[in-house]
Picture (cartoon, rainbow, N blue to C red):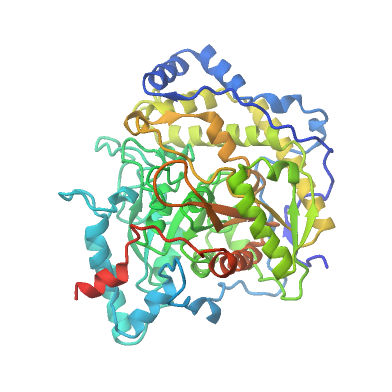
Length: 597
């Protein structure tokens, strides 16, 4: 049965052209060390070299798609589920099921918001004790360095302790604000929190006028703080959020505690690392090209990319603010609180609440097999087993679908992301005449190449986006409530090259490959969620590499995706052989805090 939800901006349901999926062989040379430095200078100072590199990256291939001029431009894929007439907008409810704690003897158990809430209510622990336990583990500048500091750029001890004391006082009188009261969270270093500088992964420069503490906290994070959550600090990110490995030579690369020889994924790399180490149950990230979902996947966590502008209207047509979490319940709690309607944001404030699906609703998984099957053998083995569980145990039906021009549209998304990134950086550059000064060599290269994108190219990218959105609307009309399922990333991890820690690196082939599934949700504005569904053995080092399975839903279908993530959690906890994996260096924050009493 089709949904009765009304939308603004919903695309025409029109099937796109039937095109064969032929994976392209990308030929972007990997650059590191001196080759990276030289290439960065060449593309910066010689526009012809930049343009040739742009062409080699296939950013211009979209103009060759026949019939594209028949489609309307979609420069912003804004599709808004509208509030019904006569209904007063309200906040999403934190329902009783989200207070449920996982069994204490569960394999690979992570602490959740419900765990902390119960400990605080029973006075077995206080928020202040937890904060005082965490700060020495993450704060930079100590000798020797704090064990888990790689995930954290800045902590403000005075702000953290003040918030923790207030939360402790509320519990003492039996008046906690919510299940999140006193729960520690982290926030990506491109997201404003009052009193903190948003470095965006760049090194601090006291002469830069843009490096000033924020005077207010951005709406989604402010809602979490209003619910009592304690921002323990800002988390390290890939510089400018321009790639997905998480490598950052300036701040240091956050550790993937599942296997430290592999990257944590980016660009919300610190958030993924902090969750895998057990320090926080929730991190807030941003996602313009998988930057919430890839680090969630690489670190064995849950990550949600909401519908475009659902949490906050950003100056972007692809980027959203979304949560990473240690459990599916915490992902839902964070999402529901941080998306409270903002009356001062006319787009975000007009969103109708996302509604959980009816238990009797038909469950459908759509798979584009030619695309899905491009993942590595290990990832395919894990994800296929998970899908078999969804079909055999949970009643999902799998339908075969196809999506036109996925290869070309991914190149278009990459070029679009770079163009938005250039504009955002240039508007914050200390010297507008030399905006690339001070960026690492990787970003000098990417920004110089991305600047070759013309206005005509952007129009063509927008037309291809329009084609895709119409095709997706066609698929959802044919299969109401369908979730399009893929691996989150085609590889379980990204092995670290030791030399990259000095200068960074650029490997467009691996970047494009690891983004091969996640870009579609960004380009079309759809919501998507990733959940860990198993593990593969690494090529090097000790520990396991998590594998994420991703579901993308119709615009406004966040609650359906969260319900699916909960089902995926049941699979990895109860049905997957060995259950969920917890890293050896996982920090038992509760035990440490109790020991310190």
